[in-house]
Structures are given as C-alpha cells and as structure tokens.
View 1 (cartoon, rainbow, N blue to C red):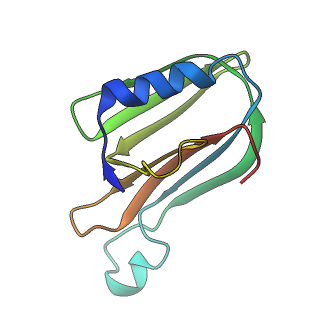
View 2: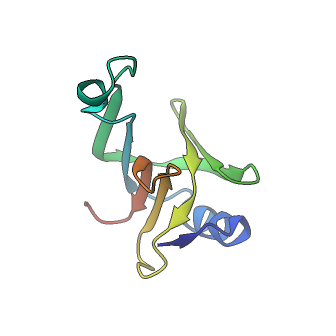
Length: 114
C-alpha cells in the first residue's frame, strides 16, 4: 500500500460515479482492544458487497483523508484514510492505519463483488 495522493483518488472516484458498484466499508478500534486495556472502548462496523450507485463523490482533507459518496438515498462516509492499494486498478481499495500500522478503517469500491 502507498500513501494516498488525493488528486489521483478523486479521478478514480469520478470514474466510478453513476455506475452500479459494490462497497466494502469497515471500521474498528480493535475488536480485542478491551482485553489489553480496559479503558479502551471496543467498537467496529462492517458492511461488505452492498450494491450502491453514487451520483457524487469526493476526497477531502490533508491526511488522513475523508471520502464521501452521495447516493440517491443518502451518504456513505469514511474518515481516517491514509493508504491506497495501487496494484489494484480495477477496484479502489483505501485503508486507514494508526501510528502502529494497524488497520482502523477500510473503504473499497468495485464493479465486481469482493
């Protein structure tokens, strides 16, 4: 994975707009965080292969980044993104890693199911 270059991500977001795509979105503060430190509140969210179509999308921030996708029914939003999988040109795979390199958030968009 490589650090995000926002102008490149915006072009890829624009390319997928107004198309039927699948989204994978996950967020975790560490499912087992509470086991190691009882002061940490474990939290997570996960959705995979949800079929969507967005009419508008954007990346903002100076790093970590935010990506918002406006669908016909509402919004999909991910914040804390730091890296992109540049090897995968068919799918947009973004991730956010903490200072220890652990995954905190992932947003993936694809024309095919994951």
